[in-house]
Amino acid sequence: MNAKAIDCTLATSIHPLDRGELLEVKDGNGTTVSVASGSVWITQHHDTRDILIEAGESFHLDRCGVAVISTRQSSQVRLSGTNAQVHGPQVVLLRTGERNEFRASLMQRLGALATQIRGSVVHWLMPMTRLGY
Image 1 (cartoon, one colour):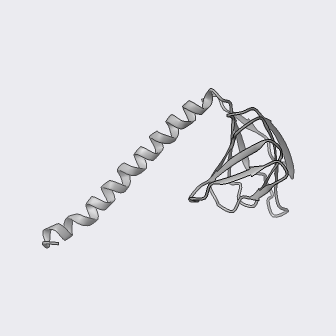
Image 2 (cartoon, rainbow, N blue to C red):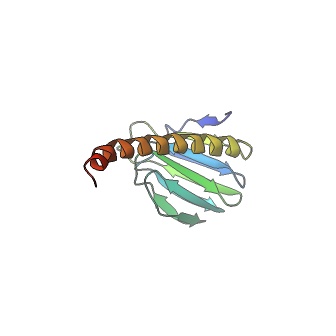
C-alpha cells in the first residue's frame, strides 16, 4: 500500500481531505479531531459508536489503538494533542484508490483474528464435550 505517513509531532496539524479519503490515526488517545469544513465519520478501536462530526464540531479520541477518520465530502480536519503527548500520534493518509487495499488488509486481519478466536473457543470447549456437556 502506498499510504502517505504524515508527521504529526506538532501540537496541531491541519489536513485537507478529498471525499472518500481516510486518515488512520495510531496511538491518538487524547487527540482532539475538529472539522473546519465538511463532515467526517470516526471509528475507534474497540468502540461500537458511530461518531459523525460536521463543520464546527469536534471529538476527543478516547481509545488506544487505531482510529480511522473517513471523509463524507471534501473536508478540512484539524488534529490537536494534549500537553501530555510528547510525540504526536502517527497519522497515515489513505487516498481514495488505497481504500480498497486498506479494506482488503483489514478484512485479512479480521479473518485471522476470527480463526484465532474460533481455535481458542474450540480448545476451551473440547474438555467440556468429553464430560458430556
